[in-house]
Length: 116
Ligand SMILES: [Zn+2]
Image 1 (cartoon, rainbow, N blue to C red):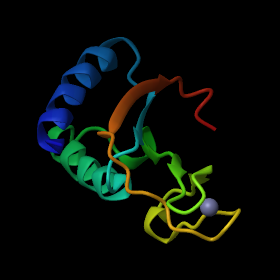
Image 2: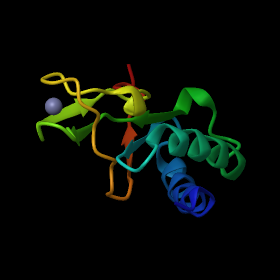
Image 3: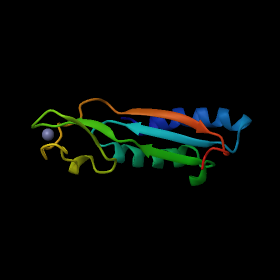
């Protein structure tokens, strides 16, 4: 994935949105991929460079758990985020098959009232 190109595309959306709602929080959701947590970290760095005015209080990058398939018994189970490589099947303890799908990135806006 080309995080710098993605960050530029997101930056263009942020600048357009910021004119009407400057206090909204940007929520970026990363799913899937071989190592989503690395992608999330790289994306955060590139977004900081591309949009210096977007501080940490207004930028939320979330790496969601992804369903994995057990290599031993073929059950499907959600792998907790940041621990994909250590995840084991809850039924038999087998290792998950590698994720083959490309990662997905969603961009959402939360109004400052719902940011929590
Ligand atoms: Zn299993």
